[in-house]
Length: 359
Length: 264
Image (cartoon, rainbow over the protein chains, first blue to last red):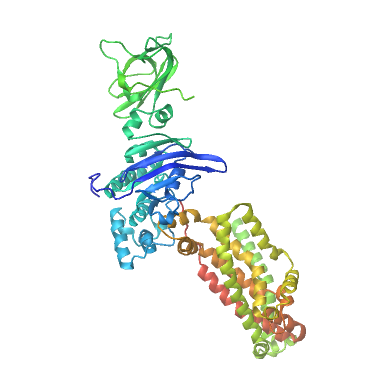
């Protein structure tokens, strides 16, 4: 595997969906959804369980029939009416879906066998793909004789072998332990970019989404809440659901007067943040890493009582309280803080967000 | 020492139980091979009775084999895809179908046979054919094949196997043949074993359904017990055992030890 990302021209098809929706037994799992995935892009569907991400993936795959007269195109070709076996999609499942009655190599070659490729040719092709995922030494083994990580690599090789127009991955790493998950995540990301294939990747793990996705669609209750590049999702979440689901978000609630949100705890703690706009009750949000120790002149933004500190290596996380409201702040671990102490911080102005109240 | 004591008791009890179960069979074998059972082993051993049984009943033995084979083929053709269809369908309808199919096991064989005769008695050729017997056996054995296959289907993740093969472009029939069938092999073998055993030994249904031209082995046995000397009837039992034991052992060996399952 080479480390040059985006080296290959896109080999996948663009996906365009219009009004894709699905309900089971009268419960709407996916509200009418529009989606466009350009050729070669890796789109991650991210969300908690029950948000409709797997349903959307299965609709694209052709494993579920959509509710209404909706439309799904691969590179302009309408595939809505085609069953999965005629859509030419590669699929990687959380539970691998490998065939226990076949060897590793036979699994990889199965799609080619179905397509009528001669034995010698498909064996060579399977060997090439197995080498690509580092499984060449296991080619003749039974599926039951290889580990979970190896099984998922085999499943990936099998899905890529058919040169699919679109690769669909349904929580492919969820069954693996944390260390393996992180390693395989990096490998899959590189491999997908090397193939230049259009991929839709479902996960509930935001770190996985950030690492793999060119774009992330955060899903909430059967709708796409926000679809954007990972940095934008992280720094400019559109609503508090997205903000909470992707990373840690602090929130301070209070009245805004003359453009500033001012909290006075009466116990020497105090917050004074720029909010702008008319007088109103507001919630201001910011990420833990937006906090800086207050040094020198200038107005401090927050004076807080430290309740706990956790050492993370390069950084430390402080749990603090301002006017009875808890905050989590990440600061360089070189600075000395101790529980019970009163400390002052500033917040990077650009990191302060205010969301329309959704509840 | 306590453990030893219980171990020996266990072995003793097991031996007694085995003896209790196998003694009648062993005595039958001895009876079928002895010159005169009333005089015991002292009268000497002979194969005369076995040869006589063969001369008298060879056709019933062959017919039993044919009926068992036909029954097996039919239950495989109906039962295996049927079990898969029922599992795929699921829900109340599938359970209802399963119950209805199982009904012939609960109904006395004689009643079932009567039903078949009333229904098909008018179709002379069919009524008098060996196939008629086989159809009766299929009705009676099908639920055993269905249940054996369904039990194994419930232990494998057939849906994800099917979806995996579908994503690779395989049409439905091919997915069934390539990835479902090989992974339910054990259930099919277990079902086949039961079906063949039941078919070869079936008496109730067959006795009611048979014509003089379509006697099976157990019906012939009943004849022999009723009208021949004890030694011939016993020799018949011996022939039956020789016939049924090897295929049973063979099937058990093919079924083999349970293979390791693919777990998540």
